[in-house]
Length: 277
Image (cartoon, rainbow, N blue to C red; front, side):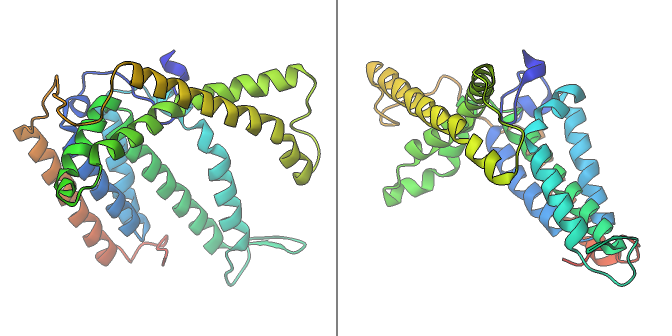
């Protein structure tokens, strides 16, 4: 079952990342996203990629599971790679076929963008969804946004909605697979034809999926109402969030990583793969 996990699904474990304070992981995630977007040459991006691989090693999540969970992003990666490969212009083309031209700048831009996307998705998943249970995530979001309660912002409801949305990603993925299999069994042609025909073939998939999503939402609402759920008012927690010394050390390492990436951006311009963004 774990080998078929999807993007956004929690993977139980006993690693350092699993035990870390979820509030620290959320702040670290923000820092990681910032440093990934700050990387503007291969030297700085290589540091971010190394940090992503280190997070994967520390999380003790099998590589096979990580690779399989990224299947939904294959189309996005291919689409982004093709767009950058054929629409980035340069001086001397490496390959030409009719009106299509591939330049060295396009190859560099494609590699850079794909590596950045992999780091963004992989790092975000490892720091948050794979190593943080939905309950811990809801408590962490509510704790970090608690100052907004003074402005009468429904922080608990907001945290609960985000957690439920993440929780239903694997469910909706499984529902989509079932609907596609059912439509194929009825003789639906979902693969042949041009773009317009393929888009029309998606209607028999999207409509049942939309109906199924509403059904799940209604069932969840009824279940919460039957259990007398009343939001965060007077709610106590079984596990109280506590920040340890190792959490502060991890946060300091993420801040130091940001400084290293900024330095690599400034002094790593000598690389041949430098990409100006």
